[in-house]
Image 1: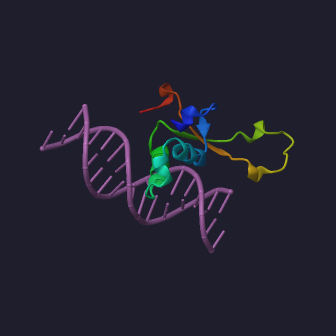
Image 2 (image 1 turned 30 degrees about the vertical axis):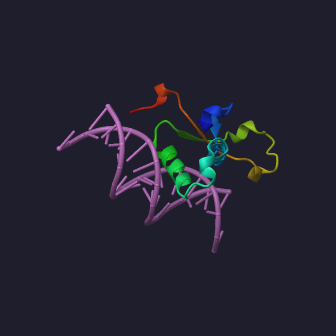
Image 3 (image 1 turned 90 degrees about the horizontal axis):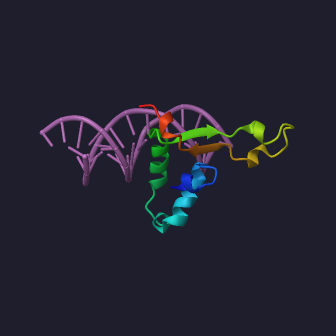
Amino acid sequence: MAIEDCPTKRLPVKDIYNWMVAHFPYFANAPTGWKNSVRHNLSLNKCFKKVDKDKGSVSKKNLPHPLALIDRFWYRPHLSLIDS
DNA sequence: CTACTGATAAACACTT
DNA sequence: TAAGTGTTTATCAGTA
């Protein structure tokens, strides 16, 4: 839901956490472990893929602040791209 | 009853 | 170094 609510359909795992606590207040005070479960599902389920940010799209002239840029995103591949 | 699925816990390697 | 991230295995409850 978090990923699909994002205009670009891709989010870093931290933003997925934030979306969850924002839309489901349960997680604000939930027992620890749910973030582990989120990451577990992202890794295990074929419905989710990880992609590295295309660094070339930011700037060709290697501008500064590489550390300020989040470079890992999760997204949902099209169903036809999910191999069984 | 068995197989499958999703949730949870945890060990672990790797990155920042 | 500590915290965060991602992968993986194990266990369990509920479901088809």
